[in-house]
Image (tube, rainbow, N blue to C red):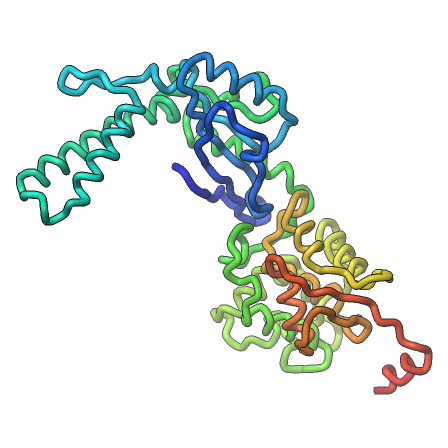
Length: 365
């Protein structure tokens, strides 16, 4: 249960995630902070020992501002649930202590006789099942169905109405998706997971960005797959899953083209216009593109970072000669554009205004 988990894809195909962690009732607000904006929600299993500690936790939760932070609380505390083993009553804390003790004994390895190891393995499994039973009561379906545990959202007085992890995930899914009102379709597998940085900075993305930026000058790229010959290839799938899914290709009288920003609609137009205007804005100081990344991976957009260079390339492809990169020795514009959207990148961009004579020369060339 602990760790990071993915939700089902949104209506636009984007998979967002939440984390599950342990928390004591006397928590600090710093412990609740999101360590990354690539997570959409946090869930805490509150280890309140007694009913008194439960009340402390509830009071603190109710005082918070409403956020996508959820607290799973055993109503009477974790010490109320016990199991009996050989006439000995054990609570969760006792079982964890026994679990650790058995693990230490098992670490002796070959020093243990075969018979003793078999006995320890059996005790370890029996103890694990006992822990699992209590945890399912304190933080699972049986506990929710019998009202032995409840789930609260930060800032709420009333518990959520659900009686299983599945039901909770459905509520979480609905709540999270309401936050991302400005999302756009992302249908490319592995590029549609918000927390997955596999393709961020990838040479595969550099190749696609290069083809978008040079689409008009290279006839080989002028197809609805950016020149890919095999429809089943990975570059073709990525192109179709991002540009194709957003209907960015258009057939004109002389063949395929990529739509202008003005030819798009809705959330996609807003996104492309934001990218275009941010890159082309006149500023006194160079602009750090990572600020734009942080804005677009967060609500209300929630777009995977690896897709941003592709949308940026579409938005600024006619303005490349007017832009200059900073904080890098790399001269390849496509490589810089892809790297600029990687986590913690320091690359900057600035608008370079040409004189009238320079502009005329550019038009001639």
